[in-house]
Length: 364
Image 1: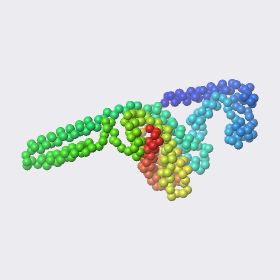
Image 2: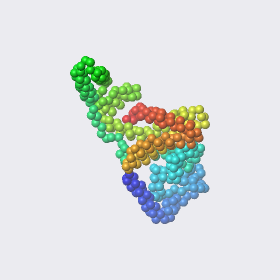
Image 3: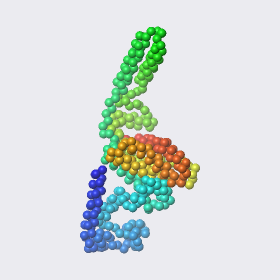
Image 4: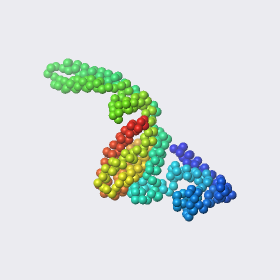
């Protein structure tokens, strides 16, 4: 985490220094066409992009700012703004996203777009930040996985143990008199031991390789399934790393995958369109990414794992409930049952479809 702090501190320090350097140049500097620069600012009367006469802070024809800053400080500001969106929008967006997500989503859908960070921009930023933080705190795929389980050897050990147990039961049974009341109990145990041995024999019929991998069809495409399974057998750690990287690269797929299922929850409400569901889904995914960031940092800082797990169980459904109720103006019951379906069924289906698509795309 100190690396990020140092990077931001260096950027701010560079911006302050650049403002001093840029301001020291005075009003004697001109651009290549001889237009004056006043402390690094263009003093133009027409738009430098389209040539329209300027009448305000922005060109009314193309929307470009009337005054362009030609200073390192301005460049650093644009860099920080473009990468992190550290302007007034984000400070208006994040509190609402955390505590009043339904109000934020509804206001954005209704047209208040200049006041808030767009859902897609916030989603992309949060996903990027989440994977960066995961790298810093060590929540990454393991670098070395060495399967050390021999299924055949393990099965033989289990068989030997079951056989020895059966022999001991048989010896005790043989030593008892014919009229002993304990014979019925031992005979029942002997029958159970025989069933266990028969079960072990059945297990041997399954095809297992030395790594303990069961042959199966993941996509239904034989060539793809065989190639994928072979890669996992040869280098599972590399495949886990590719899975993690691909999940980041293709995370945007979660949005189009989720929209149809959310639409199904409101199929009979014609007031709400696919656009409404897209904004809802994107803001929700952005919040979940930011939540994972916060909880991973807290866990790394020493907060008990039980508290982090409890937060993962409680916060997402509560947030989805509040966002549903505010976005779609639902009653408590309507928001609650939709939240339950989203958290128990739709999330699972979307995640499975997402992983399946990564396989089809050849992402790992």
